[in-house]
Amino acid sequence: MPGSDAWQEWSRGPYCVTTALNALDLDIVHGFLSTTTWAAGLSRTALMRAVSHSLCFSLLEDRVQIGFARVITDYATYAYLCDVYVAEAHRGQGLGRWMMLCVLDHNILRRLKRISLLTHDAETFYRELGFEAAKHGTVYLERLQSSWSRQELTHEP
Image (cartoon, rainbow, N blue to C red; front, side, top):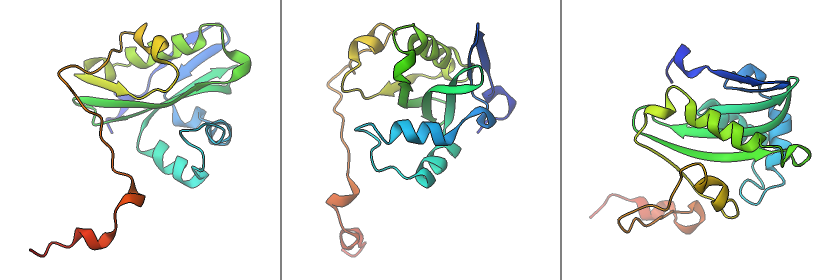
């Protein structure tokens, strides 16, 4: 990961969005993510590993974690946005939009060719931020670990 150019911070009244890992409250983030459909069952240890290999954005109110976004990136051409949330008590105030504008304004991410994401219920929100459906017949594919076995990986002809 790039050095000092990865750290950034934005402020708005009592709110702050920061990429500083020491501002991240992993217990709060894990507590929220464990209630979601996309991260249910994610252990705290796995989240800690994911966070350590990602560019993370903490949304704070007076230094208390109220939102989060994680970006998986190669820092050169591509990023994948995931684990985005704002605590329910803070929704409807424009904080999620502001946090996403901060993410998109990050000095590394704004230089990338592509930032992608998957969403089940926030398509309108992301479209308003400039995200759109992939063009040219792009197909999303995935391989779930439970769908294959190690025996299939033998390299014998």
